[in-house]
Length: 359
Image 1: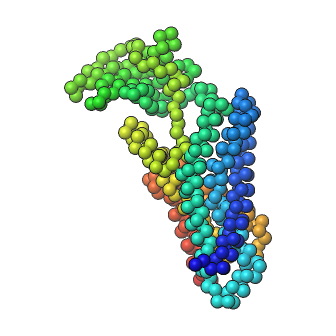
Image 2: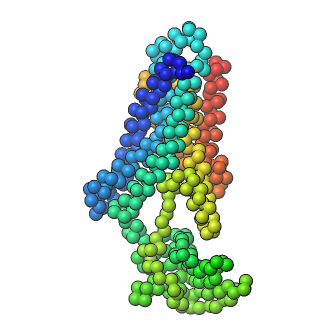
C-alpha cells in the first residue's frame, strides 16, 4: 500500500513535471519553428498544411523534453520540501533520508515507461506524418537536387547504387545496376556515369563494363555507351531517407536487417536503435542526479532550479548527441555510443549521492 507521504511526494513531483514538460516543449518547438520560418513563409503550401505540420511536430519535442521536465520536477520537489521546513519536521519524526526520494525514483520509473510508450507509438506516427507533409507540400523533395551515396531498390529484381545523383540534370555518377534472379545476381552494369534520356525514357550508361553471371562465372563486356533497360526517371530515384524517429524500435531493427542484406551501411542505424533503448532511461539517471544537486541548492529560489534544469538538461542532450556522432563515425561501438551519456551521468549521480551521505 502506498503511504500518504508517498502520495504527497508524487504530487510534489508531477505538478512541476507537467508544467516543465509543457514549457520546455513549447520553447524548443518555437525555436525550431523560427529556424524553419523562411521556408515556411516562402512555401506554396496552404495555411492548413503548415498548421498541421506544426501541430504534428509538437509530440516530437514533447518526448524529447521529458528528461528536462523530470530534472525540474526533482529539483523543485526537494528544494520546496526543504524550504517549507517539512524536511526537518519529517526527520524529527524519524524518517530516514532515503524515504524522501524513493517516491521520486518511482515517479521517474513511471515517466520512463511513459516515455518509452510515447516513443514507440505517438512519436513515430506523428513524426512520419509531419515529414510527409514537409516533403510533399511545404518543401517538396524534387526541389533538392544533389544526393550522395544512394542505394535503393529500383524494381522487384533490380538494385541501383551510385556515388551521386543530380536530379535536375538527370545524371548518375559511378552507378552500379544489379539485376537479380532467384539464384542471385544475374547481370550488372558498372559505369563511370549514366545520363537520363527523356526521349526514350531510359538511362544511358557511359564508359563501363557489363557483367553477366552464368554458371558461377562472370562474362565481362566493356562499353563506351549502352542504353539500358532501366526506365525509372530521376525523380523516382530520390531516396526515401527513412528517419529512425519515424519507426518503433522493432521496426528499426527489422529495417537494419533489410539494409544489411542489401549491403548498405547500417552503423548509423544501429546507433539510433541503441539510442531508442537508452533515451527513456535518461529520466531515471537525471532524477538520481537531481537529488544531491537539489539537496545542495536547499534554500535557493525556484528560478535557480529552473535555470539549472535547463542548463544541465541541454548539456545532457549535447553529450547524447556527441556519443551518437562518435558512434556513427565508428570511433565508438554503437551500444557504447548510445549509452555513454547515461553511463557518465549515472556515475556522476552516484558520486554526488555518496558525497552528500558522507557529509
